[in-house]
Length: 574
Image 1 (cartoon, one colour):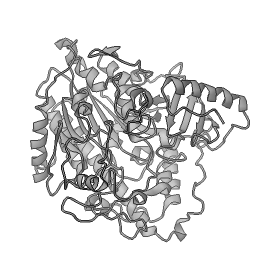
Image 2: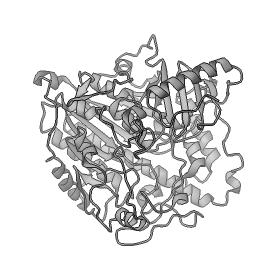
Image 3: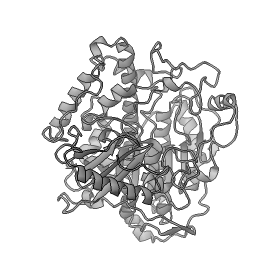
């Protein structure tokens, strides 16, 4: 356990307040105490913008011993899919629906169409709601990002709000907060982007947190709050718990603690290409991929040679900060696992770890302050957006990201990154740890699964049904499937869990049918075709060779797009 610092004592007060949140509006319980005692606790941990190969157990050089240990004692998946970006993935994971079905087809803005209301619509039920109705205790810490986020009309007012220099009330409609969607306890941020040293939109339960300690760092705060929740849950031993821990790390701005950055200050001085080669070799050595079917794609930025890169020092530092953020997240996960062991909950807890999308290519220095990016701190110190890379990133006063070249490297062995529907954007690490439940620990699961499966899987673990109605609302049927059979049997399945999977985000789109996948970069871009069994890294576009297959699959994509409420209407296949 971490020593009780001023920071942790402050968090203790915050999380104690969260425990006062009531259970108003919950459906009648349908469990019996004897059945509840046999059901496992469920812990879902989500990273934010994690590179596919960031973790040590996925080929990375970043120190992640706690996640690596969970992997060695549990399972790794090499074909788990997300929805391509933060909020769509979170909506899908929590509801078991595709993003548009849940109401978050793009981001958290209301565009006046069923698939784009900017928050979970009335025909959704969350994992927390469904499990709480069957006797589970429920809690969440971290990034919510599935409530409609509306900026102040006056830009100056928005900047004051973001920097804690003005109070304009709730950060979104309270009836869309986690505590209104099934979570008994919540400590975290309602919006998506945060200053890690003083985050905007931080709430405890549904009440704004007005100030934070001087030694505050958001990843530590989430870790301490998760531990506090476990301590509270274990006081009620007859009821299992569902805990969702949604870290913001390593989402930009890249901000980390100095002692963590120091570990990596010399690690990335060889640059992008060298990192890709090293990670790829480790991925092959770990037998995550076969080089015959997953060759390393060509470097997407051939003109960006590291040796002639004039901003090498800045770029190496940015990547070091990214690594430090992942490292600190792993440290906190280790503390949480230690608490599960101390409270004798570890053996009866299913732990699932994943990321919301691939590494981020976004460059906040291009945006500058505004909307969700403060231009100054609480005490009015200016925040720099170093477009010319004139100030090294890492601390609170610099707002920057790693950029698209590092993002491409971090998603080795794939192409592209966050927001694209190529494998680099939608493939995510997935670890599952379940003592006594997982058969043949340490094995690799190659069966494709999707975040829409998380709802069905959690309900299956809890021996609970997926509701057709909830609190008088009709619930959209989930296209997700439970992947519990993949955990409890080491035998390869006789048929695919999903004959087909669907994606769309800002016009970028994909459809996977068995091992065939069509994908496009934008609404007006041509469809590409890949045989993922023979070419998982998407280096051989077969569209010209099999035009009939492209046409048939694109028509199927169009039909599903209409069914799943993709809007504005998708264009005809190119």
